[in-house]
Image (cartoon, rainbow, N blue to C red; front, side):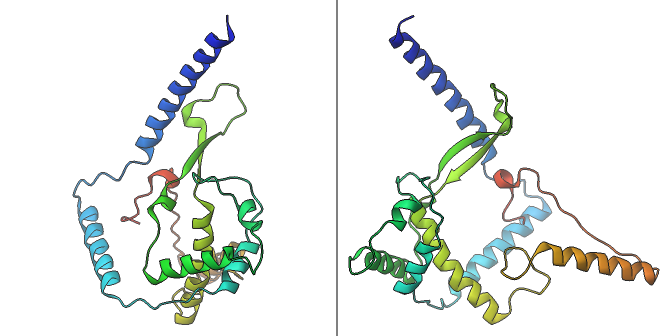
Length: 228
């Protein structure tokens, strides 16, 4: 066979594989089908109330400073993976330090977005790469794991927002002490020891101890946010 024919055959099979993966994950990422059950109606009401409250709430404006942006850039992992804009963390970390105006422009842009409660829609579009869960040469579509690569500048902006958001949560005492995940200075082992201690106290007092464990199947793809 000629190289031209083989190349055309490869492109055709590659296109069919891409179409198969696209159809599979479109179904995986489809929105929750609302069947108007009692739980779904309640979730819709709560969601509307939350949105109404957020719209009527006064935004406590937070200032983003140049030093915050510089610190966030230095904390980025030196990765070469990129989103659809082909900009990686490694490229951002190579930006020259002051006085060149690169970081000043980035700081002003983030400041403007936060002041106007704006998040660029292009930053919500991810480049998805499929990885195999198995080591076989022929991989079934169910044995793939998607990785979504968002633009690195969106991750940088999220880092800055999370820093101020976490400080606001701590200042207002929002999270209870029992909430340990995704918090600096807290870990799951502390919660496990607490659960064991509570179970021990229940056994000593001859009382029942109740526990609820929730496991979301395909939570990354199919978790019903409003229901949660």
